[in-house]
Image 1: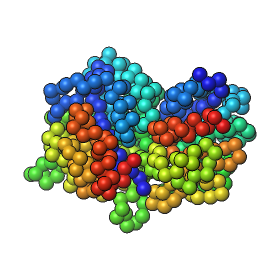
Image 2: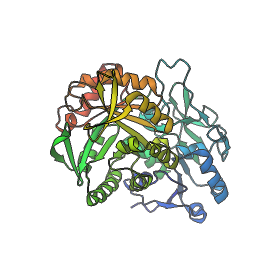
Image 3: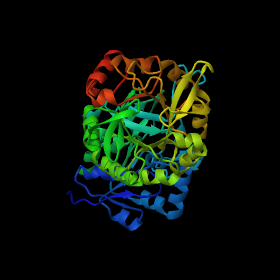
Image 4: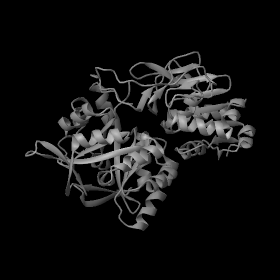
Length: 202
Length: 252
């Protein structure tokens, strides 16, 4: 086992175990916790997420976890809703988020003439490209990863990877020690495994 | 461009894989975890596990199995069978399932869709719909109990209702096509896909690689599910993907 202390932040319903399982296969026995002290002391932190922005943000604010997360200086990886909550403002429940990244979070819109049959959520495997992120090996350019989301982060200053779903959006963000993916690396087969491995090796 | 998904489905009884041809004549086709891992390595995009066990002991075995699956595969998987209340779903979520699918329980109690979506989010809730075409009514009738029992629900209005109640995805099985291996119900599929704006999984009827292409192109399905053609090695996932790519269908 890798001796690193990696913490997965626990905050509400959602499939957190899959992140732990994926790390386990990489030799890391991660700790799932909502204890700020343990989070601050961790070598690395993963902020996963399946859920709804408004409810989750309220919980993060009232529990003080949002202040803890913002104060972290070690590498942190936000996943899916975790990434969105690190943005500035979400249309999901019209809520101010943590503002670690400068980008807002918008809802996908189905065009009036939906002849191409756009579906929401954006669910399934799609490509990542224009990668310039320290935890995504460049050979993963154009590889498929697994997404499930109805809200998205537009392109902006922190964009470190792009995906196209009826328009281009940020599928990867990076700013200082903060990394985030809109897709689920823990559910993205061997491609996702390479990303988690790179994060562990930072 | 979002890829069309290929989904092998594993029927589970007492913790083991089975596949019923037209839901009778069950025949064991292996250990679920091994089979799941093999499919994931072959490039399956997702997996579905349906528990067809009736007993309480069997249910507990299934939850254990879900924990095991979650430990060993790193692609998304859906579990279904025997979920009739929010607590049943919670147990499976905690065991590591990415999505749950509900079928007859949703027909009996449509509010279950709302409750599950509110508790865990729409992305967690797949509503499975089994239906048979009725020429007299010129419509598709929703069935339960493996197609043996007709309900008062009609396919197209029911999938719309399910979407409005918070379903994240529809898994449509044509009971007329299931097990026959002559292709998916493409006309009905297309109508569903044009009626709702959540993803649609086609199920029932896969017998040849061209059937998958037809489900995606004619049926406008977002994903296609099959069991026996994969379990009995009649079609391999890598061959199917190569074929679809050649036919211009976006696949991973």
